[in-house]
Image 1: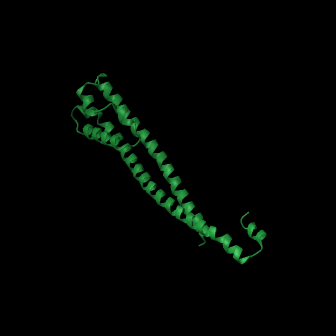
Image 2: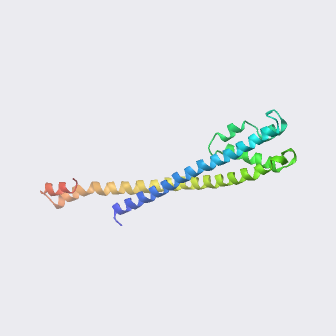
Image 3: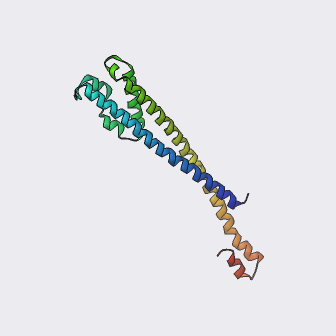
Length: 168
């Protein structure tokens, strides 16, 4: 394989993994919005149950911080921890039995988001590796290109017009 062909192949591989990573990043954003919506649905249901009192023990037992603060970051580890804690609390029953149906919706959305984040993280690593391979191929192509003119000048001594035509 020529160095040009190697460079073209490395560039294509890098662009492909970059597009995959960008698409997966979009998917992460969408799934995060879905999780946020389910979490806020739960928050509204809890507010109805406690009569709008944020100081109620049922509300405080579920939400250590304002639900809007929990959903603000996109696919953060803190958000995932908070949602997992809420799911576990809802599945514990007791005063939360009426809200237990929200646990399955939250769990399904969190599982999908976690899977997308894992795919994106793997693609970030693959993109970095492909970018490195592309940079190495580009450097090798530059090295070869920079040697060509002096070699042509030795081979085609006195024919500067012809030599220049290769680089126009």
